[in-house]
Length: 135
Image 1 (cartoon, rainbow, N blue to C red):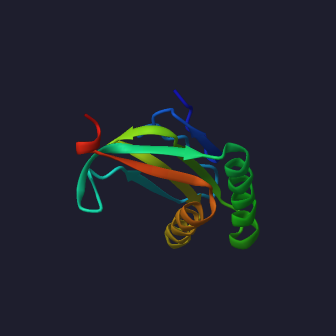
Image 2 (cartoon, rainbow, N blue to C red):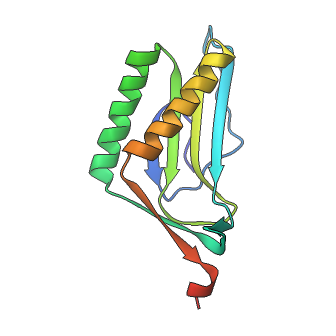
């Protein structure tokens, strides 16, 4: 299982850990964690899950750039992003974003910024597997 570090990213089929908590660094007082799970419905239709694919060389470059850009634009903070690839069943986590800062408001803002940037910039595609299409 992936150790839960607090700076970097991880794209893989590994499950997302939900309980591990590394210690806070001196001066940090806030952590915001966004855990996105696959909903059981897509476009109003039941799904068994989502198949995620990515162009890894580009996805890793974009995530690396986003981490650097986040530090440059928003100042020092810790961030870790994990996005699942492959099939992720309904009700299982598909993305985790953790941000640690000195204060809560900036942690919330940064987490929202990273989520928006991942969704709009990183070449990860999803294909829902509708229940009626499986058999």
